[in-house]
Image (tube, rainbow, N blue to C red; front, side, top):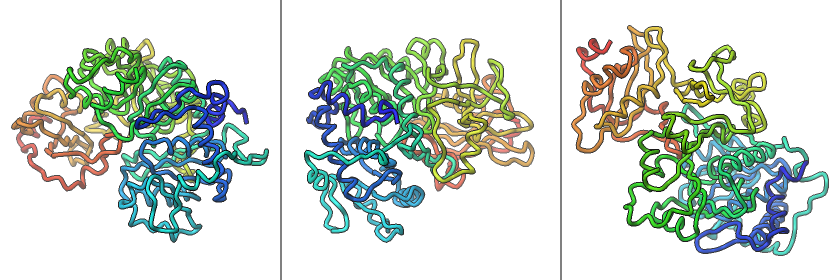
Length: 528
């Protein structure tokens, strides 16, 4: 294998070239590249002492911390497959993930002991080794990560030619999707994919050796691990890791450490904007602020610009990481765009038959190249559905303008057909969000005797607004064709969401939220 495609080797090289350069800043502690390389070696020795070999899965459920990065890098060096687990999942969801990837070792943060108490993984066959990080367990069967690693101080893992990754196409990480439409799928991501994701991020962020990247997104997701942390290690730059998001602390650290690069989802930026202008401090060091992961409104981009946050857009998914991006200027000049394709990938739009569509027409985003996942873990059926003729089908529908900028329309699975016409819920949602009384909205197609399918809007009212269903229907006039108007409106207090804030629409029809208001038959007739 070409060493330059192994992230663990990058740390080793920087430890040789600039041993004292800070690699990680965490809770007042600075970890140099030399120290990080040593810790990765010790972690590798510890894993080998437990019998971890190339191809074994090592599942990790940790909040953002140096141990997360040590294990990620140690697995890469040994050829073991790193499986980051979403710590926001409930115990049954964790159980499903573990049973699906069948790890040889499962490490978890001590703060999650109570949530995981109900798991019966100690009796799994084949047996699973269990280790705790940051809190010593009273259970003798649970290993202590820090104590175990420190026993190998000064040692390096034994890696003859037959062990360790030998091919860039070998799996490096299994990262599970959010599961908005069903059980999560394990995307198998290779060493080559990580390398080319880093090259794309390098171009997108304009990364430099002297950069300081603030990471508050969870490292168990692509945004934190592959768009921020991994590219920073590739460039020999410095990352600041926050264990959890605190907007005031984020502003303090931006000023204190002269942070230059940052990435967040819209929810994070909204929380940052809620901090009073007098408490935000000096943001002059910030060169690039990226936003992605959820729908971003033009109004939010303008607010960020006014606050001194130079926001540029990205779009991606677990299976590809960064896919599209737009500069600050393009993000504002072309409202609604999610950008143009990244440098190291082919990205196109095709119809349901796989034929490329013309500019202005709706098609599914497809990707080909080194940033694609290899497969879904032990799921050949879903893999074959997703990767066809060498192209990865993202499931996202979009239009492209004459300059090559993409505009998301909706998820292919969310689209429904009403009276023979295609309806894209995201388009309806954008209009309904413009109503001053709407805090948030989710629209989905439901069976309808007359039209085949019709729209059902789930709406969260803004506090203090006496919003009624007919108000929303009237609001659609002149903004949407009549067949796109929702036929049913249900007011709710919250939405079921993934850890990145995406609405889990599959859970809405069977949700337990009370129905506070629905459209009357008279209103329905007027709408249709």
